Length: 565
Ligand code: ADP
Ligand code: MG
Figure (cartoon, rainbow, N blue to C red):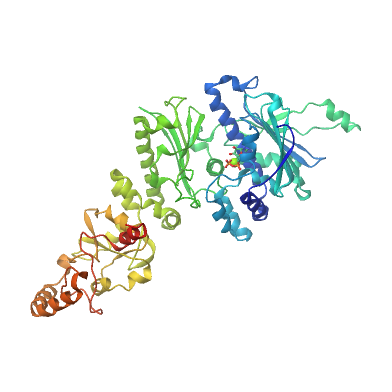
């Protein structure tokens, strides 16, 4: 297909383009970070493909990104010699947004610049950010391994349509030219570009080169232009960040690198960088994002680490290195001893991967442990990812106790989910040997529960669990620090030595004298209850329903009912 074709952007792209230009206006320079990030990814992909097919590198094996500008025409060009794209790739990658759930996500955007920039950030807009500064974007690209005539040109003014046509492109890779908006001339200046590139690309493992300012001498500027070949200057360190030693990496560099690997616009909350030597050798750089992605609960959502082997990029979203309940972690693992030709399939059944997974899991748990020292910071984390962490005890038996230590709950003492099991234990009453909790739909509902009456009377704290996952969580968590966890709505609550002798005696006596009444109540409720008992647990309410010790809880019943069981 040589002819020029005009196609429409997918609806989501149109919405995104419109919102993004407004939302990110105050932080426009990030477009360059996104384009450099893509160019670097493209080079990474080619380097990987070239392991099996070295001929893909053609006569041009030194992968790099070149950035040039034209002050006169107010334009900016980025060129990489990476993997490139064919016509289908171009249409799929630069015309649609493949991530599922995007439409729903976009509906949450409000048009309020401040709010939306955060939301768009966690979505990762990438290539389209070029339109924040450009009124027209031209992409010329040729995929590695195909003939020069199979090049493609893509153009768009970002207004809903784009064109694609075949071109002849002898050089492999992608060249992106931005025709800058009138108010974006600053990005056609060498000085400004140099600063931005420095800021955004020191962590990138291949050279990012900027066109040197050409001193034009004499009157005939045009003749001078033709006479001088463009000279290039490498701006960045060009060492992959994780390969450098910790003490010479600045926080800002860690943060920028995060934005590149995680496709996020915001800084991460925290990170952990480690080199492991010995039987297995690998480096990991793991990040905790500030914000949960919109598709954290979608099955097919991308998750996992970027896998490198000896600094060669191998796979994105390698999910085999962390358990599901840590799927929010982003970052890189670079192994020195896995084979370069490792595939997703092999990753699935490799004992070496299993042992890395268990070590990386512990790394993350330690990072969280350490972060928990700063309660407010940890609470920031907890609000975003606590629900996912609660999947942990059910999924990861070996680390159950450690994960339990990282959980936070609301309680009768604290509305926000800030109470750790250790806090609770440290506040236990004299003679108390159990951790008490109550599960329900909402804080308001559990707080008015008659089950709490006796605990209020005795001044005992009760954890209040109101998340959907809590019942499932508690079914995998029976004790903490040697103390059993007890659901106060279940069975015959045994308060042990917290019950006074009088209470016990009163209960026994009442059971004896009210025998007939109990029988009658039971009869009239027929088989809707299995037992009717006298209790000293209530101070204000006349009666309360309890669940049998081994019966399904209310949340689980609802979940099963909803699923038709
Ligand atoms: P992301 O980088 O998060 O995948 P982007 O919007 O930045 O999203 O880019 C979309 C896709 O376009 C990329 O995944 C890639 O397939 C393709 N692409 C973008 N820039 C380039 C490039 N310079 N070379 C090759 N492919 C590219
Ligand atoms: Mg990108």
